[in-house]
Image (tube, rainbow, N blue to C red; front, side, top):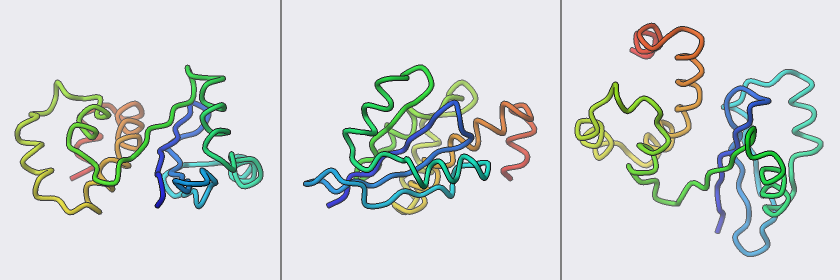
Length: 135
């Protein structure tokens, strides 16, 4: 069994998804596809990303203002998605949940992992332009 985590940092754009073995807590995989990294950052991740869950937790603990990890439960819930989404005032929770309930697990995970990219678009382009670009 694998425990999955989303790692975010103010030092990178996007996020890294990491999987750790439930028993040994050793790193099984990490996915950089949702992170926009410079060449140097990419090399640094490949060389120094924590090899066990305790190391990752310590990394975040030392710098909680700039680093964060969120565990992705095996069955991602709507409440997890809604809690992570920052623009609640612009959305209707009931309508969003109806759409969520129609999504596959893969679509839910994709939506959950897209939130940081969406927030980055909002910061760069403003909410109206970011929403138009998603259509």
